[in-house]
Image (tube, rainbow, N blue to C red; front, side, top):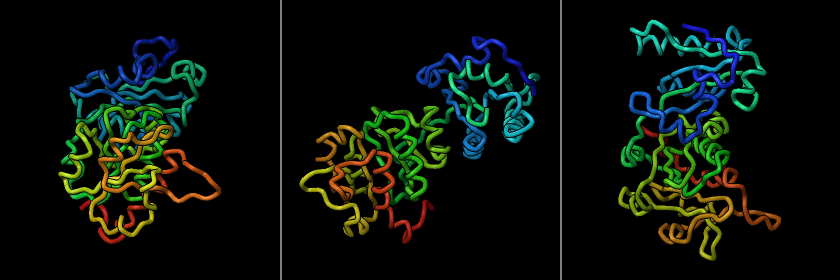
Amino acid sequence: MPIIEIQDIHDPQVRMFTSMTEAQLRQEKEEGEGIFIAESPKVIHVALNAGYEPLALLCERKHIQGDAAGIIDRCRQRWDARHHDDPDGFPVYTGDRDTLTGITGYKLTRGVLCAMRRQPLPTVEDVVLRTRRIVVIDGVVDTTNIGGIFRSAAALGIDAVLLTRNSCDPLNRRAIRVSMGNIFLIPWTWLNGSLEMLHELGFKTVAMALTDKSIASDDPDLNREPRLAIVMGTEGDGLPQEAIDACDYTVRIPMAYGVDALKVNAAAAVALRINDLRLTYGRRQ
């Protein structure tokens, strides 16, 4: 397994960590799929556990025998099993902190980045199979909010996440970091059709919005529904009216002191308590 010293922040060997945008990473084909970047040993371990394939590591030199040692070993084993005829082995690029900060533009979390191959996404039908509670993210483009919603969804037992195409990519580097790797734990895919598709799949839909017809998020009618899709919109404008009109319920979060709204990732942590039915039905079978 080669340890490759990087002296120049413009070294083309590390362009996937340096000069490539998120859009370019998605389009960079490695055996048919794009690339994403995972940061920190904990998050990389979660991604490896979820079956994602490592392509290269960028690691601060002092962590090679420290925090990154376990990651390097796991990546090497995964690489050797898949590329047993490769004489070069799994590449680990390294340098001192100042050099790597120049490459990435910021100090690394515990000194490790891993470039990984994306996996083919499942269909909506496959993602929602045997689910009880799912989240639909509609038009949320802030990476921090995406990561926060996924983290709340994982903590509160949500079975799956769907995203409209005008939402941020969950495999954005910052979204992954904010989610603490929980993006790798919950099945997700893009919702290419309308919310009506979810009705056809047996879900009642819940629009999180403040309207005159909103019911409280702790309304018992919600917990009696066997399958719910909770639809969350942007922090500023919220859900578009057509999305609200298409939903079976419109739900608000009761708040005190005249507060009219929460940040969408904070609202997700409250709204997803609608998932109380998980205590009866349990998780995905």
